Image 1 (cartoon, one colour):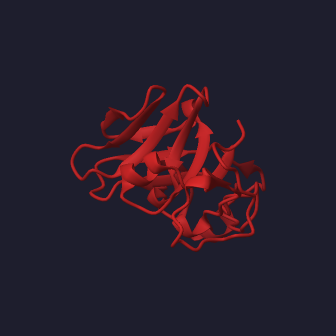
Image 2 (cartoon, rainbow, N blue to C red):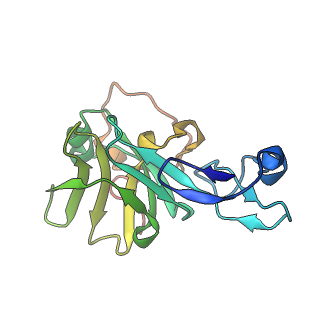
Amino acid sequence: KNWTLSNEFQLGYISSNKIDSFFNFFAGGKPGIKGYQYYSIEGNKMAKIYSGRCLCGNIKFETNSEPIWTALCHCESCRRACSAPLVAWMSCKDFSVKWLGQRAFYKSSENGTRGFCGQCGTQMSFVSARWKDQIHLYATSLNNPESYEPSLHCYYSEKLNWLSVNEDLPKFGSSAPT
């Protein structure tokens, strides 16, 4: 029987009576994302899969890249792009993200471009010359956003004074370290 993570991405073949033995789910891995680790029936470790989508479902993504970093961004540009008090990011290797659907793009700054769904308007990605070969994905677009765990605050100097968030994380007055 084919088992698929989503309708578009085929992960492998298993028989229906071996589903429980095929996957061994547990939280762990790199700080920032509590993803699932996948194991084959033989016990060989397979890559974690992170997937997400826009509001209407026309744009979907998957990556097996571990996040390079995770952050809560307080910069005005991110806040305005999303009409939100902050944005939760995870950065991955650009080439590792597989997209279904055509994103629209907006050059939001001299060095930055934002990808979004042209139908529903959901923000999906951000790329910048500052972070070569990386793509930033919106953590709240993950199919399992509860697995996301931020590791720092960036542009904390631009934080809205009425917002209360996890104050125990490291804080950077401007961008997160590269």
